[in-house]
Length: 453
Ligand code: XLS
Ligand code: NI
Ligand code: NI
Picture (cartoon, rainbow, N blue to C red):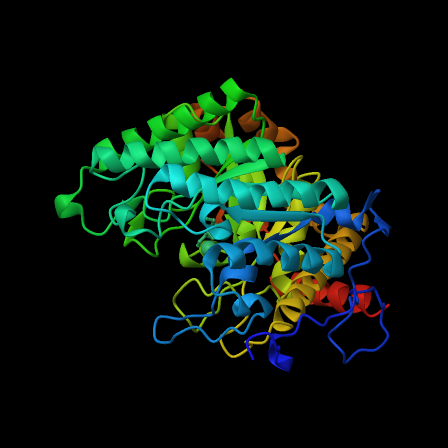
């Protein structure tokens, strides 16, 4: 019985192909993602560098805070956890191949079950990593990033690197050491730190300064060890303001950059930014990417979207073309997500989309939405739509008093002299309407017309 798969368990998807604007209803083809098509001087696959997240795709049971998992997966038939972990690798590589992605991403604990000691856990993990490395040789699949799960096990109840318990800090460091070694074995482009429990539930019992000093030390130790063994992945911090903690230290891009500068980490670390996390911090994805790129610290992107009507990190596959256009506009302005970053689908199906094939549909809508965003943003960039708009808006700083302000020739006294007798009318005339509604209408036209071709 256990060997017979139901229709819902089947991994029976065909290779996903680019169909252009044909077959509009199937949802099983790409309409915008044509991996080898060159756009703006680069292949789409090199602009987008899509990655599949192991945890959401192969491990996630589709639980929510009020309900058990609903997922039906082909490897459910393996009852022994190690057998299942090894079988998952076969399904995973079949999935990557059918979808046509070049990268994967994983936490250490996504891959294999824990043993009673770290020594046993590492042994389980190494077996699965061996199998992944074998597959990499035959398929050319690359790892966008790997990371360490320092948040699920109850030992991390009060954090890993910010735990008030020294043994837990030590254990987190030991776990991370092995994870960095794995990063070297699989050739990870990046190494990510998401501080899921690195924050506080209550300030009344928290020594915030001491915790932040500890985690800064932890990051330095990680980088030092990576250097020591020649693991050259770009180190990334992934901001998120809250959830699971009341407050997380890597609150948003700006806070994380300030932390990195305070503790001398900004030379070796960059940022991995996620759409839904941006929303939880009260920002748009575009805002977070802009803050990072202005600081020269855009490392990589976790692709997902939130929902205005739900207050937690729902990790929905991206489908909002307006948001993907804005994100890709920032990426183009940055010259790429890079040089080592990519778009990792930190996304999962809704609880009601529980069949195995929904994992394909989810990635298809996500990949196609970003591919569409790339096409639209590139067209806007080529036509110089926003560039001219922004340039004109600041043009009064290009000469006269504006240039004097920028080049340091002006001071408060000269500016008072310049302004003292200006009339109300002259000052009103110095401003002009933004015509924002017209701008938004133009963006809509670009979306509809670029994609309608
Ligand atoms: C959770 C985070 C997590 C990181 C990796 O909200 O997005 O999935 O990306 O630990
Ligand atoms: Ni997240
Ligand atoms: Ni993430």
